[in-house]
Length: 172
Image (cartoon, rainbow, N blue to C red):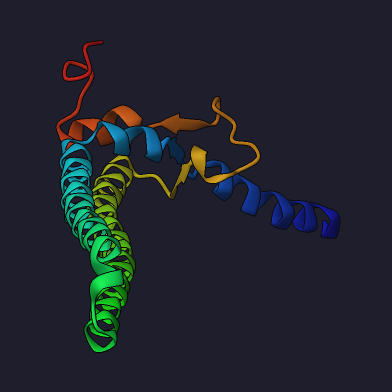
């Protein structure tokens, strides 16, 4: 009788576990299909171009002033020569500072926009998981060594449908 009770206590958790439903998705694949991701990527590219254009404008101005300085430096009095040299150094420092600030701003914008899109995707995954009665939804791109595709459901299509990027939108 004791053995039966011990066996029953050992099997009971397994039967409870067996009733649980698990699912998986490939989040990066879905993310890249989202219109919000495409828009965010375009916004970042536009911002990057604006920074690049401004930096190019500053570089052109510095080169122009540098050439002018080289042409007249031998004919200038020492105090004017020093002032123009200082102006070139200041312009160069401003350009370097702008470059550093633009990199930081670009990284912040990328992070912010990706976070917004990721939050939309996470909500869709949670909603699809909740509606399907799943105890857990794994991201197969997240480095999980093994997921049994026979014992877990792939709910990628449900998540895509929640995001409005179903198979019809993908040309499948």
